[in-house]
Image (cartoon, rainbow, N blue to C red):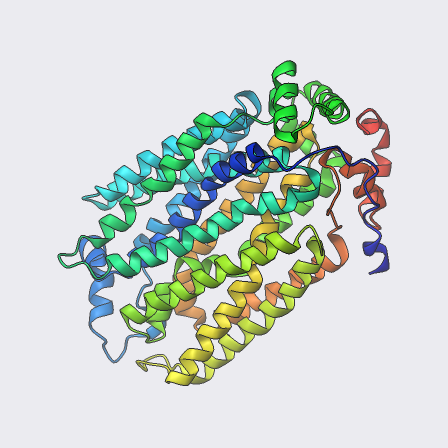
Length: 510
């Protein structure tokens, strides 16, 4: 532990920067990409538990949920590959789109990439809300997935680059905060639309995704691109003027020259993806990949995608299950505020380690309660036990929301050097989407076969990731992005061996 604690020296340079209205507005606009992503996560779970939706597109699942036969397992009611594909096709599309997004963020800039994301979101929303067949539904989800791929590539980079160093963590977490707000809004809207007579409530749920889609598109038209992106693409004067605007001061020469130098080095890199795998870039690459894998193996998306279905499975009934997922959605939002407040005060590692303990305890209790109390063919949990499950799910969600949720995106976006930042973010999104797809496509089948053991499966992974944080994740709080190599990787007990060996190749960049 002592070696890991020495991972960061205090930043030598704190560039002059006011927290200007233009930075706040730009970040709020950009973070609506998170609102869209969250809404898409939340809406699919609620819609797939609505009888009218299941009856129209998944009649076999509808029949299974309506009639409880003696041999039917509680855990297997929703086990259907087509139903899982409706949810997971979005992540497969996002995975593909992120490679194109890596190119557009570099060549067209962060702002235009967010604009492309907004257009995809609008197309996907129209297809989903007007769907008359499973094909239209899945095509709509694929368009939304392309939007997610482009937004998740551009928005974290935009936020990290535009924010002053001292509040970079808090502003970057706006993206994750909007994800949680999107999930909560989707849960509330699903709760309301499930009451609509006539069976068209699910269409309204899917159509309302158009609101954040339009916000992101209009925001991307109005905001300036980041100074880093403008300078990297050769617009030096424009980059300097935007830097003055967002910092609220004319005294930006030092920061401007550092960005220009980082940009000059990045221009020399003709193959950023190949460069990403060079020895000195291995520490941020490994950290970024493991953060994404571990973020999904917490089991959070399993809970969030399928919260209504999960609570239904536990015997809560349709209304109660949507109501319970609204509660977990609200906990998610409030807990992300904890992260925004504390990430630049207590640091990234402390939040991750505390949350690891809390998630481990919560999931173990849920697994044990379900194992002892919910039989395969019993129709309900006792009232007391049901409350315990909801409380433990809330405890799990809250700890995730101030740790792995926001930090899984923040840490990769602030650790890559400029020359590989776009490629690095692309790999980050790609790995996240692969694992999100795998979890989304397999969760209902895993629930059917592992039953309560699924919660113990995820809690085992929480233990592994907490050990990873303890020994291998350095602290990045308060370190300027362009100084990560000197102040983070070269100081870390394990990662410094990669940097010192590759010193000749990178001496010009530090």
